[in-house]
Image (cartoon, rainbow, N blue to C red; front, side):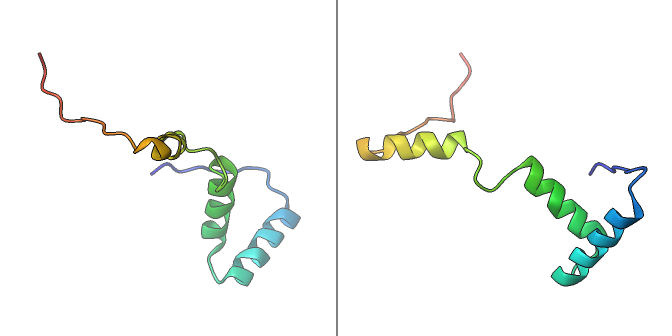
Amino acid sequence: MAVVRVRNLSDETLRVLKMRAAAHGITTEAEIREILEDAARPKDRLKIGSALAALAQPLGGIDLDTKRTPP
């Protein structure tokens, strides 16, 4: 796991983060982690594998042979 240090965060921002964490019943660190995860990987992002599978579904799906032997 990576470790990130945030410098020069205003006291007001930290106070709000602590209040949000308390409202969610989690630590400030966990609240910040969730905020960053949501920003980096939004729940409504396009997942290409799922999109391709949904596209192929009306055609009977696809069968990918992932166990190929080397030549």
